Amino acid sequence: MKHGLESHEERYARGVALREATPREKHRKRHQVEKRSALKILAKDDRGRLKSLLPLRYKLMSRSPFAFLRGAASVMARDLVREPVAGVPVQACGDCHLMNFGVFASPENNILFDVNDFDETLGGVDFTIDVKRLAASVVVAAFDANMNPDEARAIAAGGVAAYRIHMDALARMPAIDAWNARIDAETELEAIGDAGLTGKLKDIFAAARESGRDGDEDWPKLSGDQGNEIAEKPPKIRHFRKKDPVDEKIDAEAVFAKWRKGLAPERRGLVERYELKDAVLKAVGVGSVGTLCGIGLFKDGDGNHLFLQIKEARRSALEQLAPDRAWRGHQGERVIAGQRMLQAASDVFLGAATDAASGREFYVRALKNRRLGEIGELTEVAELAGYASLCGRALARAHARSGDAAIMAGYMGSDTVFDEAIASFAMKYAKQNEADHAELGAWRRKRKAASKKKKKT
Image (tube, rainbow, N blue to C red; front, side, top):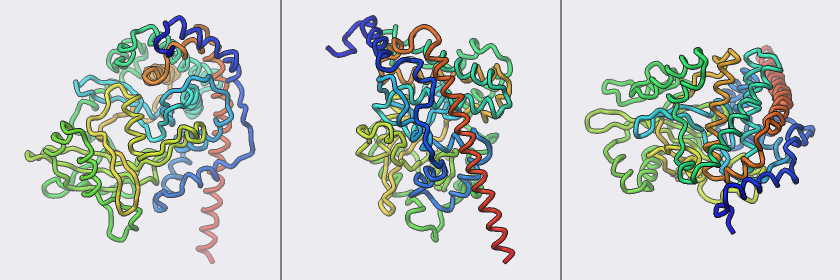
């Protein structure tokens, strides 16, 4: 009998039984403690990235331990290879940290809070992998905000508790209701109970509904007499140049044409009302810096504009954890499949394409998602705790779509054992992340000193 045809009680019992093989307390420790260089892992991950953007990547990662964690998905994936797992596979986000959640307007113009980045997504990965990375990011963010260890640990445990409790609630719903569940961001305001966080969220929600993003520093601006060009802002935004190597630029016309051709007929009919006017290279986020990403400016016959993002899709860092589940096809299709599985309201513009000259694989999506500013702005304990809980609930909703919520709920249980174990792991991993960040800082200082010495001679 398939698990899904068993009752909630039977599947919940399956989850409880999984504790025999992997007791929940076992997640408390770090089991893979090995001598390794984070820089060597990152260097391997840099293969195929744009060399001209690598200095920017490491500059961004060196700003703080949290910035380092954002860019080091491959490092943490390596560290999690031999860690214990519960035995419940899901479609994993793969790079699950606090900055990879965001708010956006659904087609019905509802403001939803959801997972926001899927570059590392992979199916068949244990649910605890995402939970551990999210909890670790909470602790690192708390330390960045100068909170003490007790506060950091409590906030991380609270975020995991929110995940556990919401997973249990989803497990008790009819399957179709759990699938259609959403985190309505404006409804969440009533439950947060923190004036500071509530005010910041309201500002972000308002921006998510606006058609213009002039107040957003990272949002592309229009230039030219007719507004048919994207304004440059080097090194993050610039036009592709003729002198760029073939594997460091995109034939935007050809790539967008392939993307359009691969869309479902009703969506193709929509995008055919727009014409590509301009395309630029854009460095995005931290972990994606150095991959080939761009922005396409489209306009319709009335001059209304639309920005679409094109992002290079590489192999998932999570393949280290589930090599038997490695994606064998187009990597853009992997990202699209993961986003559609995890996100409550998927993007109508999602599609894949390949650049013929470079062989790089891409996916296309609307440029519209909003984050809650920078995590560094959440300097109060109540603010970060509220946000961590919101992320925990959103992750539970996403995991429940591909994994068996009742089995996960049974494994985690109704007490706080799982929460406290993951929080303990997160505290230990935050120390490792600090050491890795220090290693990067020492390396950059050494390179700068060598460069100055060379100039003098």
